Image (cartoon, rainbow, N blue to C red; front, side, top):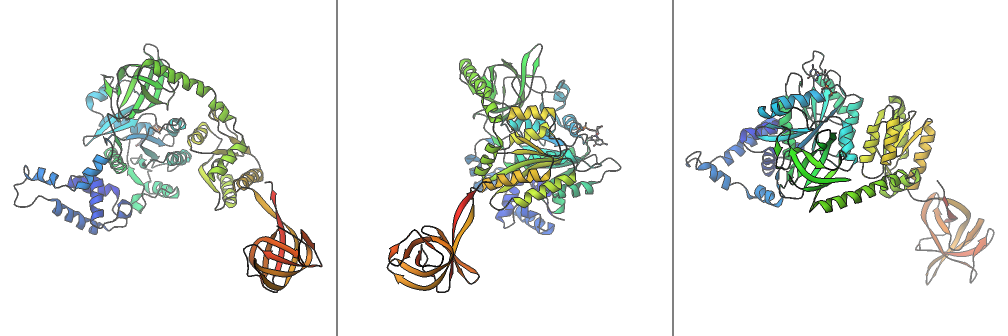
Length: 587
Ligand code: GDP
């Protein structure tokens, strides 16, 4: 049985240390790291774990417990504590989002966690969701963002805010990986955060965990149990099975990621939900990633601002402040802020107002100017980045495959084409959001499909370019032209003439080839290729061209001349010289 992260978690729990400490210790003992741990045999692992137990056990003569424990603490290796001091802040609860195909159980899972793991008094207190809640397991907290799905997830990212630390991908065991699952995978990958797969609905008679794992492997997410590094947890959200296992895995990943925050540090908070309430005015929920948000703080959230009148937590309780990992409703903003906006604290209300107004003015123009970005500009940007990022939608899997193959065929070593996402169906809002959330250029291509109306509107607002084609060659032509442009100007050789080297002689400046021009002409300063038999020995420039003792500009066929080639002294009798110039070709 391979040693998986799940196993490491259990062992670490048994030893009363964190998984990270266990892995560190194992590494010190000559064991490979977590990734390689998969190849380690369980017996070998157990041996070392025992060794570790012995080593860190209190000395026998010591009276157990009370005395031994503080001693053991003191004796702890200095490294981890040092690291803790060096690294800013304290561990903070991970912020988690749930993604996956429709009806695979995202909402049911979020409900199940809420019911089983939110402290009873609070669970009762949740009358109306604020968009996020905190669950607790083994005394540790996890913050869940309550709006599932990749549209919400990427919508925030499109506004430049990454609220989520870890993504849960829900896949129903009776259905397997579906179109939106693939979409979710691509969105999570684009965000660059770790994911855990919850294989849901295992209670169903037609559940097939193996099929799901197979589907996952095909997407490059080989499960740990199969030797890969994707954590999968079988669950039934409906029956509440496996929920704790899932939460433990979240804690494990959080620990590995070493998520930290400093309650006294600068505030990093992101709006995850907002609406206008009849009685309370603009209401926004923020999740705090770092620092602390306090009542009476003067804040800016994008184009709006305000003094925090009240902070209300998920239980409906008014709180004075909200620290790292917390989600709170904020009352007191002038207007409803957009989801995905970051909150900044300012010295006073005037300053907050000024910053918000500035932002409003800025937003009125740059988005539009970005929207005005032409295809040309996008390709130029791609050329600078030496990478063209694409989202491709097509009418069928077959068409999609064909497009992918063709594009892969024209992208070489020098220019990378990155497929951020490919899928079947019309270009949707979620594709546009994904493109907008990507750093650098990202082009959406629809092949045989059109964007829907909402996607068009959003693309205009976000400045995302969508190109649609019906003929594959039109699409390939355009991309090919773009790639050529990315490679920089292309040159074509125009052949001018040829000559035979009949003798060579030495001059102070180097070697001169005495030639007979057999074809066309030779021009001073032109390019020359030296051919020896069928082999090309050198390509360079003509340094000097002489007829008898005089420098000349060119020599025509049927005449003799002396040619010195720049930086090349190995020209030999019998070599053939080919003369040419380079002409830039327009892609
Ligand atoms: P979402 O669209 O991903 O949010 O999916 P929902 O949470 O709304 O679930 C879709 C349907 O699947 C609902 O009828 C749920 O009751 C059902 N469902 C969700 N989880 C499970 C499960 O673990 N077992 C079974 N049998 N049904 C489930």
